[in-house]
Image 1: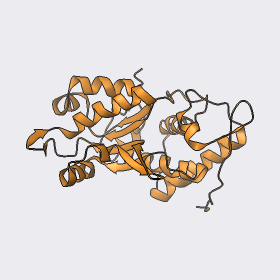
Image 2: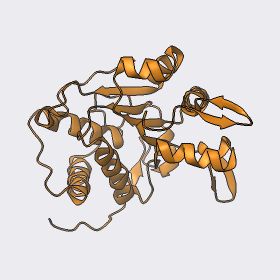
Image 3: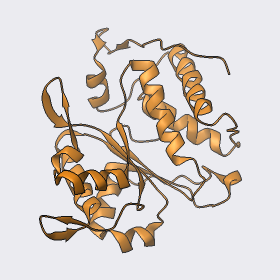
Image 4: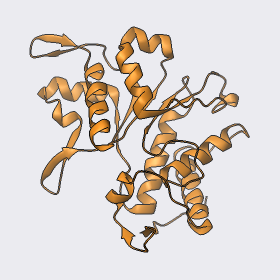
Length: 240
């Protein structure tokens, strides 16, 4: 595998002005990118995937979705995903969901010199809350000395403990966090991403109908029905 060195991309708006990465992330809509940028982004994306799993060999059914997610990352008008929403990636064990989202984040860093989101296991998020009982820290970080909400990808939603003590009361932490992130998305467009092994009935048992509705509104739902690795990425469902 040929090594790729970061070659940061300059993002140009319709008036020819250079966009900051934060302005690019918060932009509502898509861009028409030149072929050179798209082809370079594809090279970087595949490089990042193969760095994580050198034996990855996508099926013909996988390739369109991988391509779609890459176009989503660079806000290309060729994506069928809604670039104003996060990604909710659901599938069975062994599907490679965590690897895919990690590769997406790594690709963003290669292209723009910034991470797309903070990637964190859901179980670690619960552990951190148990330690300091600070809900704000689970959705915010200090940037240039200012505490503010940022984009997250929570990995393996449903693998975390279902309840945690909060000032003496038992709560479902992620049920609360989903509601918090939904309000942030409504107010500012701030994205949240998830990976999960839960199917719909398992999700409903663990969280609430309101949580499911809110995820459906703030995320592109990408759902793989099959447990067979050869059929990964076969089924894609978008909820708007």
